[in-house]
Amino acid sequence: IASTNHPPSDVHKKQSQLQVYDYTMTSLVLLDARSDSLTVTWPPSEGASKYRLEYKMADQDDFELLSDKLTQTQARKKNLSPEKEYFFRVAPIVGDTLKDDSWLTHDVPFRPITPEVESKAMNAPTATGAGSNQALRISWSKVAEASGYELQMRENAGGVEWTTIAPALSATEVKKKNLTSSLGYQFRVRPSGTDDVPFSLPSDPVVARGLSAGIKRWFNSLSDGTLLRSGVQKPVPLEEALGGKEFVLLYASAHWCPPCRQFTPMLANWYKTAREHVEIVFLSADHDENGFQSYFRTHPWMAVDFDDDARESLMAAIKVSGIPRLVVLSGTTGKIVEDNAVGKQLDINRWRALNK
Image (cartoon, rainbow, N blue to C red; front, side):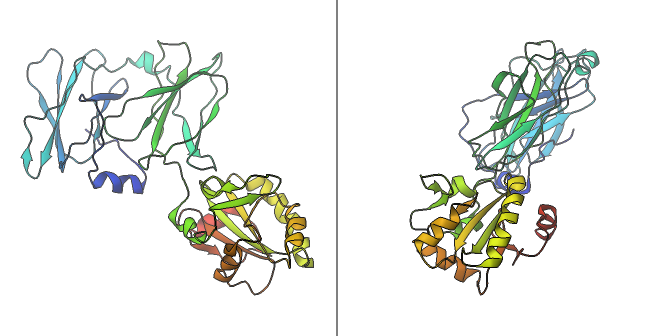
């Protein structure tokens, strides 16, 4: 048997704290079936330090021990036969005591799929950050003659079942928003209208990034928690403006500054190719509101309002003594990755290396 929960580090931390979720289901769930294995999951139990998982073939009377040392709420049993059906049951261990009155099982036996059926399955989809607040981009390989794709998702938490979010997608990529769970999400896919074709293996669990506490601290003096976007009349909430970005760049600049006017068009051209991963926030060093408005009108990114005290607070925080100045912040921690990127290669991969 092998534990198959491989969440990101913050997910593992959450689960190690044995957080209990209010799921109404009271049975063990089949998460995935292959030709030689079954993966099952179950809801977390209050106070449990470990779980005891047992299984048996459907035509057997007694359960056999798989493991009594499981700390996750998900496990995979290998070396099974597609010609057999199986039952599983699980019980929590609190301290050193097995809660023998708390077994969870299931009514319908689980069965591996045949090798022939498994050969029809698509490769697992890939889920990555979509560059916006609490959103993921899910993509998969095109299948010849497929008219569409059925996509399912689940929260990466014990006992959560799959739900179909799109029965017939024509594209091979989709963006899913409002993914708020800190435990992350998994996805699986198959050609639509093909009940005889199994779903793919699940994707690796991925957490959709929101606005990190580190970035939020930089902007805690914003008067109303919003930023301006060039060409957009309505202010943008901070979470929507910066949530999900891998890097946030603070750009101190002014219209009256010749080096700034030379650097800004170059920065704007680069930003158009990188805006899925980064957001730039303009901190104006102009002398008045009119100068700010005239200059910001040519920018494609965000800005702190000229009249907001946070503008000067931020410039003081990064110790602006000359402009242009471009400070690179980690979107996940808020730490300064590069103190001034002006005159250096604007390279996200280099910042990723510095951010490790």
